[in-house]
Image (tube, rainbow, N blue to C red; front, side, top):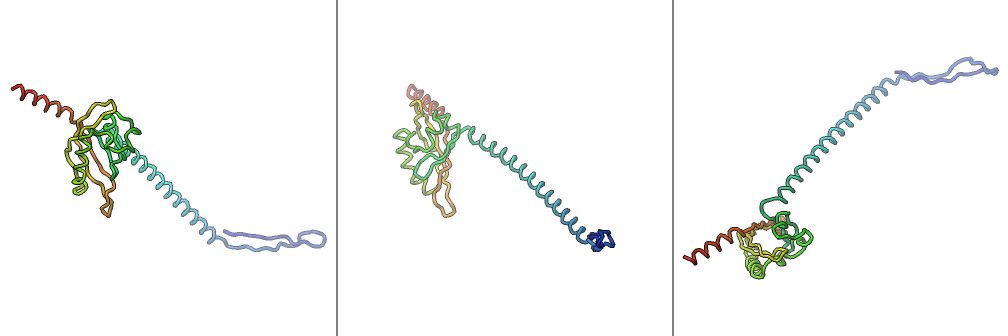
Length: 194
C-alpha cells in the first residue's frame, strides 16, 4: 500500500514543467487499521452475543419470577409477612380469598385488627416465645373475615433476621382449620349424646 501526494510546478506561462511529490509506504498502517477493525468487529460480536445471552437470561428470570409469584399467590394456604410491630407487609391471594379482604384493606394494617379478641390475646402471649425461638407452629387463631364471620385457622411462622440477628420480618402461613373444627364439634356432640 502506497500513499502518494504531489503537485505540479508551473513555469511563468502556466505550463507544467514537473511534478513534486512524495510516495509513502502505508502498508503497516493499513495492516494496523485492518487489525483494529477486526478487533472492533470481534468485540461487537462479543457484545452482541452477551447482550443476547443477557436478554435470554432476563426472559428466563422473568418466567421464573412469574412461576414463583403464581406458586406464592395460589398456594393451598395463606402466606403473609409481618413487620416486628405486627404490621402486615405482604400477603398472598389465597389468604386474601380466605378472609375476603382486598390487598389494600389488609397490607399495612396490624394483624391484630383481623383477629378475634381471644386470638389476639393468644397471639400476644405466644409472641415472646416466638421472639426467642424464631419459630411458631400450629397456633390456633380465629380471624374475622370481611363479612364478619369467624375463620378458625392454624398459624405457623419463622422469623427472618439480618446478619446481626435483628428481627426483620416474619414468614407466616395461615391454614383454614374450619373443617377440622367442625369435625371436632361433631365428635363432641356425638360424645355428649352417648
